[in-house]
Amino acid sequence: MLEELTAGFPILSCILFLPVVGAIVLWFVDDEDTVRSSTLTIALVELALAVFVLLRFVPESAAMQFAERVQWIPALGISYHVAVDGISVLFVGLTAFLTVLVVVYSWDTIRQQVKLYMMCLLALETTTMGVFLSLDLILFFVFWELMLIPSYFLIKLWGGGADRQYAALKFVIYTLLGSVFMLVGIALLDINYHQWASLHHSDHAYSFDLLELLTVPIPINQQILIFWLLFLGFAFKAPVFPFHTWLPDALLEGPIGMAVVLAGLKLGTFGFIRFSIPLVPDASSSETTVMVVVVLGLCAILYGAWMALIQPDFRRLLAYSSVSHLGFVVVGLFALNYQGLQGSLLTMINLGFSTAGLFFIAGFLYSRQQTTQLSAFGGMAKQVPLLATFFLIIGLASIGLPGTNGFVGEFLILLGAFEAKWWVGSVAVLGVIFGAAYFLWYYERSMLGPLGSTVKSTMSDLQLREMIIAVALSIMILWIGLYPSPFLRIMNGSVQALVDRLHHQNTAALDNRMTERR
Image 1 (tube, rainbow, N blue to C red):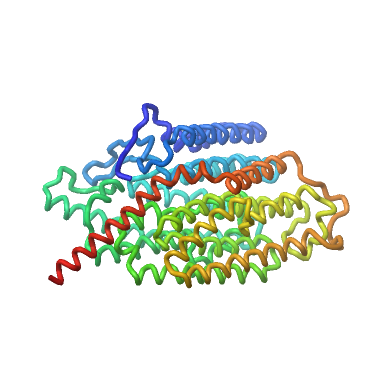
Image 2 (image 1 turned 90 degrees about the horizontal axis):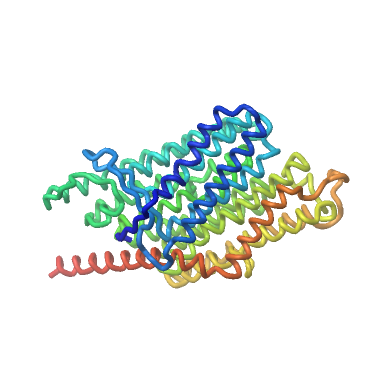
């Protein structure tokens, strides 16, 4: 994890800044068709760069690859430091992939203020990439906060719900509240580094760089405080139960494109595995911490699944389904073993195809019936067989059917949970059962049976752009489900390095306690 591999060409900076440069260029374009085609071109170039990075990435390695580092504010130890490893590189590809699909979906569904919408979408891609690429905590925090600007406007201006302004404001307030705690935790990490640097007469008095912070020991009491401060910052954004109340409103009131990003890119849980667990490993693995966080994860699994089961609106069902899936991710992360961490990381990627895919399906349904309420559907498979087929494929991935990507991730999480504590795995299994129940019940009532009285007789099946989205998502779902090896090999080295760090720190802490007793 501490090793860095540099590249001769700053490809990560190109990935990071291409979308926002494209957004600035769009400002000078007036024709809406040109705006759409230009945005799609930018998104496709971004995807090509991300694919290039994935192809050139060295698998089974824990090294930070394609690293770029430039001093930004040397006096404060702040630098522009970006790189990818097995934990972050798949998120870069996923972000670029989903952005292309959102642009394709928005082609004919966004008709008001098209230029501003596309500019916000590209700006959101840059800030999201910044979160995944940053190794300096201040740089990470800057992108973390900048995400709120395009997100707010996307929900407020292009949301379809009557309460979209309230949903946008609630999302921003919740995230800002968590960010305050996180910033305090980041400052404490820097203060601890300064104290260590002063004691050892280091050339660098301050540092916010992840790789440098990893080399500095932190007293256990400070670790615990820092962990919970970072936890609150990431938990509000994830969101982790019970900090999830903004999510159903944002996913229901905002546009489909924003819902895809919020549900498909797990920024909060990425923060746990990128920063919290490696920086404060003793606090992360303490009995109290693990018990509290795992119980919250289990509550999320059961609560989210139960709430999804009783929802008559498909988008709200998906919102609570997302809460339940995040519970699985949290349980896997804090199993703190190889299978759990690997399964959680893969599940975060998988949700970018399955949960985000179901929101695309919700958009397809809305464009035909102008609602996602169950009462407007019934027997639709007779009218739109292709839509019903892809709805089933993506939905089965969401509930973890063997052969789909969802099964691989959930299976690894359950293995890790049972290895850590048998009762945690036993409770988590209930979420799998409930997950199958809420999706299959909704699918049966909306797609099968007699044709609903409100279903239009002239309803069209999937159009070309919708077919492109559905096929692309299905390919990824089946690829990971049937042949996950390439994806697991990418993350294996970094996951193993994280497990080794946890084990080393725990052993060192135990030795220190034994020495103190003597």
